[in-house]
Image (cartoon, rainbow, N blue to C red; front, side):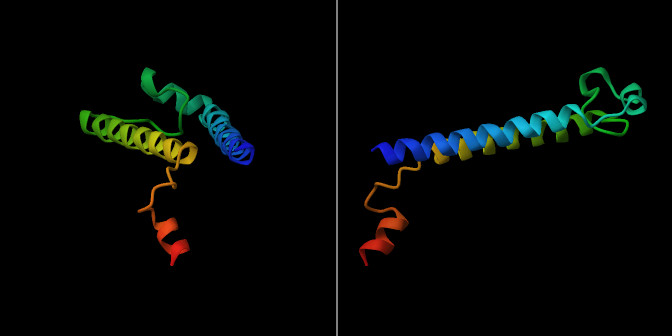
Amino acid sequence: MITRFKSTIYKLSFTLFILGGMGIEQTLQACELCESQQPAMWRGITHGPGPDGNLDHIITWSAVVIVGITLFLSLKFLIKPKEDQAGHIKNIVINK
């Protein structure tokens, strides 16, 4: 039980470390010239002029939603993988 708890804490701390590093990287990306060319909502995030039309915003927000869902599910299965079920592939292979 303690080993599983330590493993979960290790996984969670590693994930937070990676996410923190990505957050720091995002704040350092845009230069002053690019910031002046970007819309207010996207200012300081990346280089370049940013999205121009409605289609660009739809594509960008769709990507944000997909990444958010993927992040949620990956954290969910990283913290509680539910490998104790009899039908789990790991248990099928180990039992044979």
